[in-house]
Structures are given as structure tokens and as C-alpha cells.
Length: 503
Image (cartoon, rainbow, N blue to C red; front, side, top):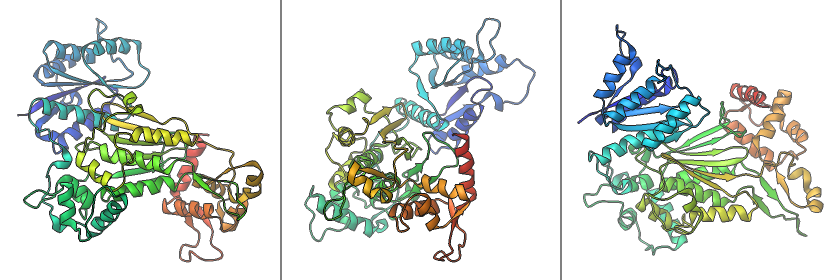
């Protein structure tokens, strides 16, 4: 059985998004088996009025997919737009209606139309094309579930590959067993091996194949079998998404490896506070964001994401916040407010959640969201926010923006008299110093930033900028040359232009 989807919207608005959705549905391994798509602009030219073409197509379709934005479109003599005509006909004919609404300012006539839609159907909002794609995917999968064409079963318990114990990475097993022994959630025998562990976790079936959870945790190359199981980490130096992206890493590994890599990405790019040195000259250090809160947020995203969605977990570090996004929605009946109070633990992926718990990655079952809030507020940060919608769950941890803070090494005496100061590990300060002079040596940068040549903050910032391809050596064949300097790459120069536009 195949279902015809009529994709509607204002003729000029969302043209790129409509084409993207059509190609996505046609090429997706699941959706492409069940859905055909009609796009008005794909029809060949013919000598008929537009409404005489698209309205019959609405009648022949099984699903009406409407996208509403800012524009109302060209109204006819009765003041009705083509999109509204299509919607009204779909309503009269009893078609299944899926409506997606962009968050934006809109034409007053479009507001009126939207009010009518809201009174008829539950609409889903979106901001970006990626969010629209994920929302449409989730809606069409739900159509198939409701019609009984796909089986609703837990992803992590399913067996979707032919991988067996022979495909297990022994290093991942040893690492997990060491973590489990330290966490002391289960008793691990001395002779525990991969077979014992996967059986204990329920990640292997009687015929010897690994469940999806077993693949994600312990396979040698999990992404070759389940390609959407990646974590994308991005750093932006401003407060919004802009290109070129200073730092962008896609981590492909087992679940624990991806969690640790994402955590290192964040913690290596935030500030650190150095307290007042004691009589031994030692000073306590505190990360700008609580490490355990950041880890809990990443763990939640990886653990509770919808693995049947084509989306990926995204960890985005902005100047004012850490925002973590994962495909998936809250349990039925839950709201963002539910997460702010004590609540029962309802895991989307129960086997994955259990495995993370046994390895010591779950602080308090059912209290992870409260734990994040407690840790952040205890450190004087604003209360984290949780923003669920129809397809993506957002966790936002707010940073303390200290634009005037000075570096640790340059402020030892100040710290002794005035209390803690922020150690500037932001690569943007080094980026600005290099861009100001064109080329700079380590000594030049240390002087410009009032640092010591051996500054750990300076060395770390240089490593990050080099690794991200933002700066390069002037003498690349001799990295340790005493004449070595640093300069911006083409990517760095593009970023300099971008920063100038947003000042």
C-alpha cells in the first residue's frame, strides 16, 4: 500500500523546503516504501488554470501536508489563497491533515488562516529546515504506526543487523567492565567477558546476533550498521548560528566513547576560574559550567533520543549558552514543567538507559533534569531550560558571560586581593590577537594577552585553533622552529569577515 502526500504552501515561500521534503521522503529507506509525493512545481506546463490542476490532486491524495509561514499568497476574488483552498478541500474530503507552522511574523490574513487551522488540527511549529524535516518524518512515521503498517517496538531491543560476538570490540568491553566495577551497580566477576556482559545486559539474542543496543555500545564500527548514531559538536563564538563554523566535530564511536568525546569538546572550550592561592601557592579551580551537569545533559540526549529518526544529537556551544538537541519527544502527557519536579523515570530506550546506569553514567534515576538544575544554580548560573517540541528536545545550560574578565596568569596578584577571576581559555581572544597583526609568534601573543610564554591557556587555545583549521603555522615544515609564527587560514579570514558583520 502506498499513500500519496500533497505538499502545499504559498507558491514562492518554502520552495526550497518543499523540494527538500520531497527528495527526503522519496529517498528515505522507510518513508520511500510507503509514500509518493506531489509537488505543484514538478508538473509539466499545460493549458489549464493552476487551481484546476492542484485541487484535483488534493482529492487524489491521502495526506495533505501544509506549511504555513509569513506570506498569505495571491488571494482570489473571494480573498482566499491557494493554500487555504487546498486546506479547505482536504478538510471537506476528510483527508489526513498534517500542518507545520514556522515561527515568524506573518501577514494578518495568514494569521486569520492559521487561527482557523488551529481550531481544526494540532499543528507543529518549526524554526529551521532541519526541524521541519524531523517533524515531518515523525508525523509520517506516526501515520504508518496508526495504520498498522509498521510494528512499534523498542529500538534498542530490536535486531536490525547481522552483527555477532565476532564484531564486538574487546577494548570497549574492557572499558565498560572497568567502569561497571567502579560504579558498583552490579557484581562483575573477575573472568567476565563479552559474552557474559552482553547476556547480562540483554544485548544478544539466542541466535547470537547483537541487539541494536549491543551494536551501539560494543560493535567495532557501530556507525557502519546504524549510521544515524552520531554526536555532532559545534562551537560558535557568538550567540547564534553563523557560518563559517569555528569548530565542528562529528563523533562516531560507541555510546560511551561519544559521550566522553562530546564532554571533552565542551569542557576544553569553556572558561575556568582560579581561586585565591593558599599558603602553598595552590589555588582551587572551577570550570565555568559544572562538569557533571554537562555530562548529565549529554548522557540524557544520547540515552533518550529517538534512534528511529534521521536526526543526530547536536551539542552546540555559544558565547552565552550550551544547547544540546536530540531527536525525540517527551512521554505522552509530559511537559517541560514535569522535568522541573520529581518524576518517575520513563526511558525511551530502556536497555541503553540500564547500560549507562550500570557504567555509572546515571546520577539519580528519574532525577537527571533536576540534577542539572541543582548543579548549575549552586554555581550561580541561571536556571537551565528544557524546550520539548514535536520532534526535537532542547536542553539549554546558560553560561556566565564575562567579557571584561582577564586571564589567570596575568592576574595572580589581583586574585589574592580581589577574589576569583576567570581564566580566559576562549580561542577567540587568541584569534583576535592574531588577526590584529597578521602574523604572531607565541611571545607576541603572550605579550598581547598579558600572559606568560608557557601559559596553559595560550597553548590550549592555539591547539584548538590549529586543530579546527582556523590558524596555521608560517613555517609548517618546522613546527618547533624558534622563528615559528601563526596566521589565519582561509577559514579564519572568512570568520574575521563574519565577525565584522556582527559587531
